[in-house]
Length: 248
Image 1 (spheres, rainbow, N blue to C red):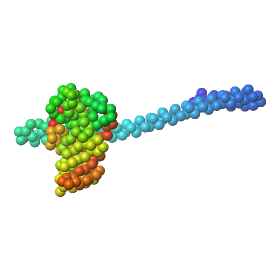
Image 2 (image 1 turned 30 degrees about the horizontal axis):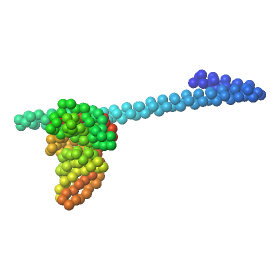
Image 3 (image 1 turned 180 degrees about the horizontal axis):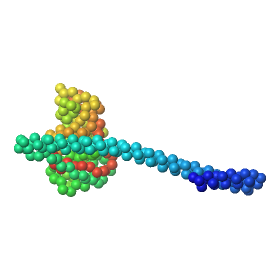
Image 4 (image 1 turned 90 degrees about the vertical axis):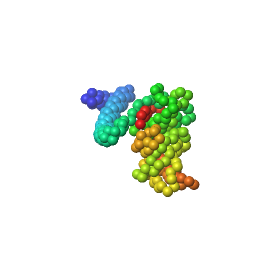
């Protein structure tokens, strides 16, 4: 900054001494223009660095707050699991210990279908259907296709698993139709509402119970049942890393 001030003063002196010649005047104007441009560029860089610094600070604060919430949730989950397993042990039942594994989505199965992805999952049982998780939410299922693991995301018509709707745990079957995500076969006498949360029921041995799927945004009554449209929590447009449930 001291160097810029010196150049600015020098430019003004040259400009003042060159008032009476065209060549000197042009030289002074060019020099002053250069100095002013350099000063403004330097100022902009400093301001950008300051903005970047404060943005990083805010992001760090946000991430720390989220981390505290996650730590609390993890501790509660561990405590709950320990309590549950203690109760099961008292009743001579086996421990409840679901297993998940991180895998990678390699590519789309078809370039014009964003609901199907090939998965890097070697040691899978081709006769089994697996649940897929993304950031803790239900993301779809994994099935065998030509001896490879194929991920069917929530919008795929063949992505089907059982769910509960709302606090009353209204049973239904989730299925995609490429455009929307629906929960079908809800009994007519039950009353799902807009805003109800949809979770996995665990009744199909694909997911364990309680994995969050999304919220109801529309309710439709049909001849023999009700169907609700769900806005999912997962919005995954490109292949990425997911978790697969290997044991419920």
